[in-house]
Length: 138
Picture (tube, rainbow, N blue to C red):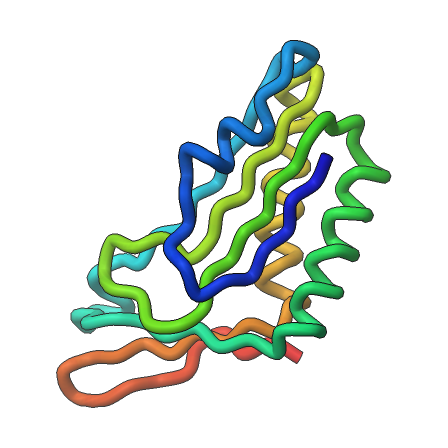
């Protein structure tokens, strides 16, 4: 079971965790990305995420397919949010279950690292004295 979403709606962390729970899982790993209040010594007021939606979903599907080929996973959730997010809000949740913790940890790390490298989702940071696009993707 996999659940991939790109949405403007707030992400439900507990629902993501519940979705990957199964009696066969000996390990569940969860990554929750949050909007922090500073970067490079500057106070962050808020972030905005934009995506090339159809391509982003396609790339997310490729990442999930690759992860499930590399590790024996039971269930996987990959949700990413777009739009304006305030400090403390959650732009990304990845939840993975597997029979053993090492597979869950490795898959979760692979998914977030690859997502940041290949998925066309762009982040703009807003400060008191301006804004800047960060981590532009292809």
